Length: 181
Image (tube, rainbow, N blue to C red; front, side, top):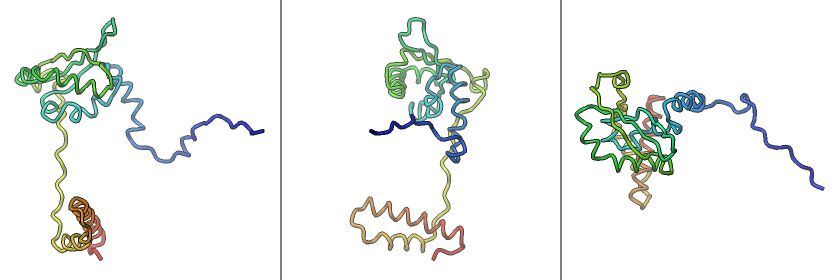
């Protein structure tokens, strides 16, 4: 007769090794988000991906409030006074994008709060995303070696990806060692 195994218990903290910073801060972020109505913190952390770059540049989510009847929540967005009318026209499409993030029809209404960029306490913080990093120019001899490495590949997109990978590897080796052999 087969012996029954004990139920699974996760390993202790020390056995798991290092954890990412987002995992360590998850409970604090969730607690702070839920106090403002954000049960899913992804709406806050990935606002630019959800709303799109144009909408994210002129607005940000402030709170989600739930009604007594439970027939959908109200998302409040903060925007400047000048961008309000432009954002108002895009609210139906934005509501669909936000509900796609939740996976169901969680948001029934979106309310806009217009203020000056340096107005109330919520309006004082700028949430502009960091510009993309500038990369150093790659030396021509590294480009030639990378092209030679991927020369035998027939598929154009795969060859381009391999050349880019070879350039990154060779330039990394050059930066750490001073040469790239």
